[in-house]
Amino acid sequence: MENIIITINPVSGDRTAPSFFAESVLPLLPAYDVGSVGDHSTVILGSGDGTIHDIINAVHHPLAFVLVPCGTANALYSSLFPADPDRLQSLHAFLTNKPTRPLSIASTSINTATPVLSVVVVSTALHASILHHSEALRLSHPGLVRFKIAAQQNINKWYNARVRLSPIPSLGVVQIYDPTNKSFVTLPDHSLVGPFAYFLSTVNVDRLEPTFTIAPLARTIPPPPSTCDLVVIRPLRDPSIPEDTPQARDAFVPTISNVLGAAYQDGAHVDLSIVEYIRCGGWEWIPDPDDPDAHLLCTDGAISHIPAHGIATCSIDPVQHGFSVYA
Image 1: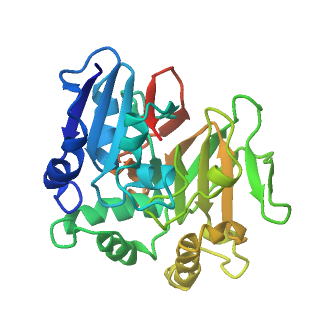
Image 2: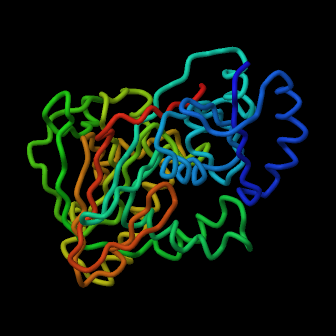
């Protein structure tokens, strides 16, 4: 008889996780003992992605997750089961003894601080600003609409920073998607100079919401081990935007809006010339000390602040961890 842990976040999403578990999950578990976390535990988790993030940063031994999506966006569950609205697919995989799927872990540190682990997204620039400002809207706008409101509040911002990219460990190179050939090619230059409008890396997922497929190539061209998919938008790559001015930032709003809209069209943004879709083993984000907005860092929805003259460093699977999911 298997020992399992049930964890419910009662304030996730629309706050219906407790009632959903009582009605739809617990009746399926009469043959299992529910106990404390052991060396190898299965966790049935009723929450959003943020609670998974909290657990992997607190528990330092192997865990197998059964996901019951009860959050706002449910990026990991939506990526594992993109075409199925049934919220019990991961539970059914567990109950039918399907093998677990290993999770990649993004490990992000600011200067030399203790790394923060993530299973979905690490970002700066617009996405981090959206998550930062959407938190104030959680109670008044508990659904996905709060992210759209926060996006409009920040859509005309640019972020001054420099980036250093790390090679894919198994290949020794950084790759960039070539939409003409529909394939990845080697990117010789491992440095990116801002300003940036968008900078977002993912592991384990191709989408951040059920229909917001920001990293579609994670599914259609599966990545090598220990890599992240990185979506970058640098406005000054647009020939019509010669310099960074308030007028240029306003003029670029339709372009960034078009990119984000195309992500809702099954990831069509990857074919737009302004988008750089990069595959690498990690990155360093070096924000301009005089740009406070460039110092926001998002790790699975949690917001951190990079101090002045600080650096955020992200690497993928730097150590073995043993986290997995039933899918």
